[in-house]
Image (tube, rainbow, N blue to C red; front, side, top):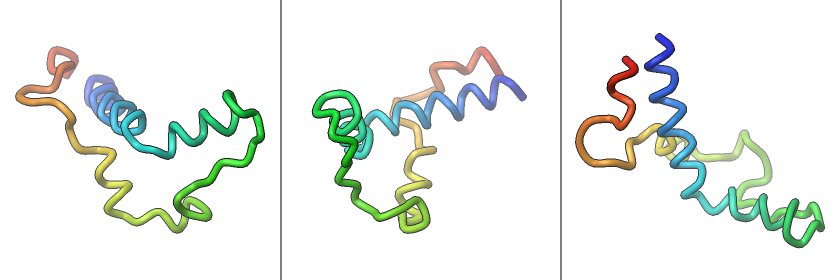
Length: 70
């Protein structure tokens, strides 16, 4: 459902913001403008499955903040 998709996207967006790769991408593209990010992994295929799965985990206590959408 749309509500479930928005709930999943909310968790993904919060976890992306908490991960150091986002800050490194912002640094490389917007701050230093060198377009040379120092990623932890050489490409998306080398990102460990546990790191990907962690992006779907809740970062809040209790009910999902968007529970009313489901």
